[in-house]
Picture 1 (cartoon, rainbow over the protein chains, first blue to last red):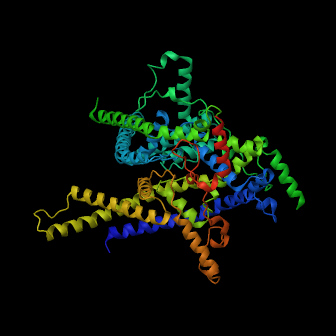
Picture 2: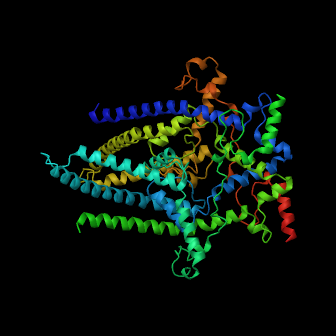
Picture 3: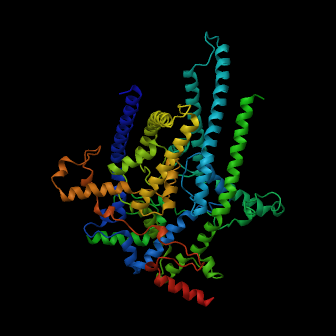
Length: 300
Length: 300
C-alpha cells in the first residue's frame, strides 16, 4: 500500500478513536446532569412513586385541557425566538450574514422562508471563500508585522540570529490568540453579565467557528436600541442619518420598542436545584406551585 | 502603500460590502415574516384594537397566576431539549464530538457543566487541527484518484493531453459535492420526512460547517433506539454486545424508553396561518382557544 494511503488511513483511524474517546468523556461528564434535569422536570426524583410531572401538577391545578395546554406550549416555544427582539432588521441581518460568512452559524436566527434559505445557500457559496481569502490575507499581514517586530526586538537585544523563526511566529500567534480570547472574554463578561469562564467559552466557541448558539452576544441589539434612542431624542436625524434597508424602509423607524425589551425568561434563570428537591432557584416564580410540590412531597 | 496591504484592504472592503448587501437582502426577505409571526403571537393582527396576546387569552380562560404561568413557561422551555431523547449517552455524545471536531456546532446539545465546557475547549484544540489534517489528506487522495480516472478516460478517448488539469479537478470536485448533497438530501428527505429542498438546505449548511441547528438529523437516535430494541429482544447480548461508556455503565442499559418517543410538539407543527387570522394550522390543538379567538374577533 502506498505511503500516502497509509497516512490517510492512519489519520482516519486516529480521528475516529479521538471521537470515541471524546464521546466516552462527554457521556461521563454530561449524561448524569442531563438525566437529573429530566427527572426533576418529570417529577421522578421529587414525587416518586407517584411520578407526576411538574407540568401535570400545574395542569391539574387549573384543569387545563390537553389541546389548550398544547396551544400554550406552542405559543411559548414560538415566542422564544422573539424574546431577544427583532432579529431580521438590518443590524440583526448583518449579524446573521457575518455568522454565515465566517461559518460560525450560531443559529440564534435562521431563515424561515424558502427565499431566505435559498439566498443563504447562494450567499454562503461566494461569501465563505471570500471570507477565507480575506482572513488568510489578514493573517499574512499579521505574520509579516510580527516578523518585523521580532526582528527589531532581536536586533535591539543583540541576538546572533535576527530572523523570525517559525517557532517565534507560532509563539506570537498563540499569545495574540490568548490575548484576544482573554480581552474578548473580559468585555463580554462586563457587558453581557456572563461569568468570566462562560465568556472565555463563548469566545473560544466563536473563534473556532463552532458556534453552538447556546450563548449568543446580544450587543448588536444594543446597537439597535442605540439607533432607536437616537431617533427618539433627535427626530431631525430620522430622514438623513438612519440606515436604509433593501426594501427602502428606515431601519429604526420600523423598530418596535416592545421587541427590544430584555426579558428575564431565559430558561437558565430557573436552574434546576442541586438539592434534588425539584424546586426552582428563582424565588419569584415558584411559590404557589412549590407549595403544591411540598404538599405532595409531605403526602409520600 | 505596499501591494499586499492594498490587496488586504481591498479584500476587507469587499467582504464588508458583501456583508452589507447580504444584510439588506436578508432584511427584506425575512423581516416581514418575522414581524408577522410576532404580531400573530401577540394577537395584534387578529385582535386589534384590543391587542390581547393568545397567551393572555389562555391565561384569562383558566385564571392562571403570573408566577404559575412563568413556572409553566420554564418547564416547557426546559423540557424542549429533552423531547428528542437523551442527547448525552454514548451515541449522542459521539454525535456532539463530531460536531465539535468538524466545527459544525449545531448546538442541539451543548455542555451544561463547567467540566463539560472545559473539556469541549481542550477537545476542540486538538480535535479541530486533527480533523482538518484528516480531511485534507482525504481530499488529496480523492484528487489523486480523480487524476488517475481523468487520465485513463482521456487516454481512452484518444485526447492529445492526457494530464488532469486544475479545471478538470475543479469540475470533478464540484460534481462530487453536488452528488453528495443531492444524494444526502434524498436520504434525509426519505428518513427524516423533510421536504427535498429542506434536506438540500440541511446538507449545505452541514457541509459548509455553518451548522445552524435549526434542522438536526436525529438518525443517531434511530441507532440508540436500535440498540435498545436489540437489548430488549436479546437479553444475552446485554453483557457482551453493548457499548461500554467511560464511567463503566452499559449504554443501552441506561436508556429511558420514554426519552426515545417522538413527539409531535415541534413548534413548526403549528405554523402561523398565512390568512392573517392568527389561527393555527394544526386542527387537533386549537378548538377551544380558536373558538374564543373567533368570539373575540366577532366582538370587534
